[in-house]
Image 1 (tube, rainbow, N blue to C red):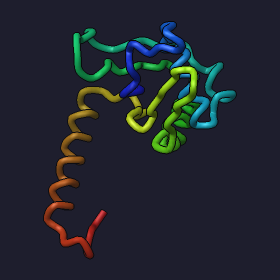
Image 2: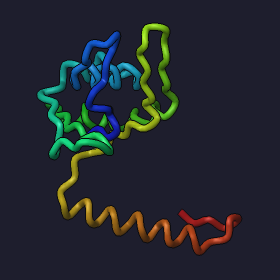
Image 3: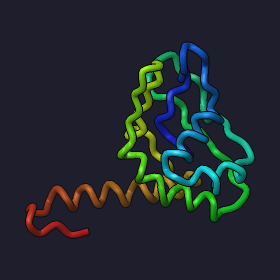
Length: 130
């Protein structure tokens, strides 16, 4: 799952489809050659909204290893902002890649994250426990 990719991306006033955006993401995490041929399909999940956050992209890969490779290298996106003279502007610092989780896995993770945040709030800064 890829979160934070705008739905109406343009390059020189021409629409850019989701597949091109995913290939750009793979390029910026320096795994384009390994991941490009392993994509089966790319779909937007959920109903389109008038305004607000963009719908997540579900990227179906041919095997688990390539999906894990994309997730492993996704931290490189935090360092990427592209602005060029031709009107192409992308801020990948807001793009997140995560595994597709079942509703039960999402609930369990939500609980763990809440517990972790509560523990961090209760700890002094010099004794932070992870």
